[in-house]
Length: 292
Image: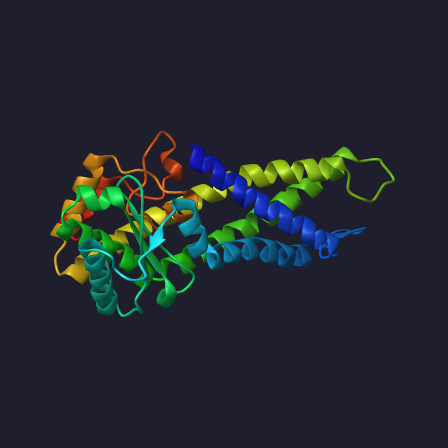
């Protein structure tokens, strides 16, 4: 619940800040005396919607390291780090991507991949995962994360988030304008009033929640593709099945929301619509049936 709240608050804050900045720069000229200029509003919405998403993408690696405390392995200092570097390098070569940065962070069993570009990504695993799984299972988890990178999932998720953000910005202002006009009916004032700004704020929150559900739905479907990619890289789905089974039994901890969509597991709860991952048993069934 806390991660979901932080994600929604951050997303809304980015859009509000961008809206204010663009308004100060005179980019909100979609509000005219004749009404809403819808083409200009759409341009404004696209700028606000996609700018926040791309900023998040570009700073995803440093933010991931900061929020998890991940330590990048520059030079292996022990056999485990050496094995991690060697294994990720081998999987990256099979997937046809450049060697990602490899990092380890303290925490319960989980892993994630992030980064703005396929050939400059970051793959990180937790100490809890390394301690709770054997090498074959850890390799399957790494293959899953490398598949996310190879599939370009970071960019895809950014584009999806940008599209839904655009509609959130656009629709909230259309609704705000309509309600403001209804409240000021009979008034000689052609400008927007408090009703417009209050409605826009409320609508951005409500529509933002709906947008998050759409993004989470897309993320869940993308997990099956990463599972299948891991099976392909390893030549068999069994290691991935074993890793998921182990992870499910270990009650894997959630990641910060900025990386949760690219992790190996997400903690389920009563707000399943916001989960970035399908239930582990469903993923295992898909791998066994060749549907992943």
